[in-house]
Length: 168
Ligand SMILES: Cc1cc2nc3c(=O)[nH]c(=O)nc-3n(C[C@H](O)[C@H](O)[C@H](O)COP(=O)(O)O)c2cc1C
Image (cartoon, rainbow, N blue to C red):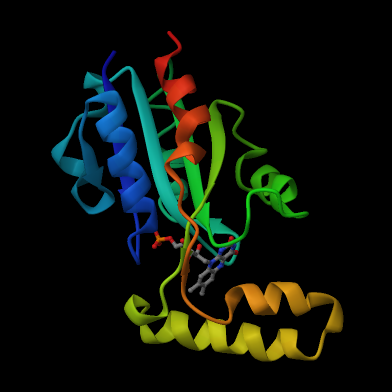
């Protein structure tokens, strides 16, 4: 089984999942920036991990653009966001991300928030989101969830991805 794991990660959560998966599958996890150093044709399966930013998954546009060249390979995209995996909007968000590309299997793993290592623009966007949520009483739980840094990663969230990767 030849598996290529790529990750596009701003604050390290997608990177951690990619590295955990690489350990479990005994292969390498390569940063998205270095994707040109590998040839997708050498692999049977390609798994991309990417942070979710305003509903968009980092790196996914690129993977979709490569679909014609990668036809016949098994492809998966693992979105890593701060929302819990059992949140009400998750299934809709995943459909928005991957509904148009059934050839890419979609997964979600909860990451976290790391305000300390976030860029200034992202930090400002999160501040704007918190300000907007303050006036919405029904969003109090979401506001509490994003008010400070947290780490929601769990190795077991990768179990479905490992299972998929081990299928022929
Ligand atoms: C500007 C901004 C927008 C975000 N948008 C989403 C989102 O739409 N859904 C979500 O679940 N998480 C969202 N997040 C949280 C990140 O997806 C989360 O921190 C993730 O773990 C980052 O992964 P990374 O460190 O690998 O990039 C957002 C974070 C920032 C800073």
